[in-house]
Amino acid sequence: MPDTAKIAWLPYADAAEAEARLGGIPAGVEVHGFTDDGGDWPASIGEVEFFVVPYLKGPDVLRRVEEMRNLRVVQTLTAGVENYVPRVPAGVTLCNAAGVHDASTAELALALALASGRHLGEFARLQTTGTWQPRFGTALADRRVLVLGYGHIGQAIEARLAGFEVASVTRVARRARDGEPVVHAIDDLPRLLPEADVVFVIAPHTPQTEGILGAEQLALLPDGALVVNVARGKLVDTDALLAETSSGRLHAALDVTEPEPLPTDHPLWRVPNVLIAPHVGGASSAFWPRADRLVAAQLRRFAAGEPLENVIS
Image (cartoon, rainbow, N blue to C red; front, side, top):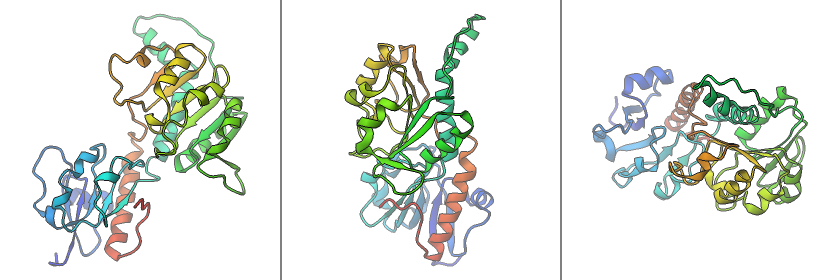
């Protein structure tokens, strides 16, 4: 390896695993494995230029970023990067993993909606006691769906809804978009929410979207509506959601909460019409093949001096 090689830290055990997973390493790049699993940090901390943050390690993985004097790129394996932004030094490019989580998160979003409507959580609990207790359920068929956040994952959710015979899909993003499909602006929510039976929340967490579904917005939903949040917990007012679900007026299926993790004694755990998953939207067998393809493509671009994809800042 030439002395001028660019140093990349990748979330694999070592360079051999990286080469096997990525289908090769670009010329002029030297790979060091970094998983942040309690072992020693690579001695190349002062030379690393391209750093892929290990999945599910959180922003604390950048706790020694001041020692990374040559750092040029931080690539996360998460779609949301709001927790990383304050840790990334000025002049360092931050890229997210847009596209990597589309399949996994969209699948879970539909799974949560189906499980909530068909009482699968309750049936699973009854199974432990051998109790046969049928209940009439709510299908996705004929329901009016609103997708709040029509990016990559929002589009993946709509694609997977195609076979469920929903009555309609209304798409909402930060700004309205011309052409087909019609995408409404967030400002249109007050008139759209009363016509939504199921709301899939998948907008990014920003100052503009924090609390976007508060007491006023939730009150606009029709009786029996379902809120499925696979974005970030802070997009939905927890106290307002607790009030609406505790009364039995609304249902919720949540992969994310605020606070998170949800404390053991939080009353939301015990609301019968609330289904909670522990933030596992992207954590499926579909994750690593897509993550590997992203890392390989970004590393090739970096080695060749080409523009990177998914640049946040």
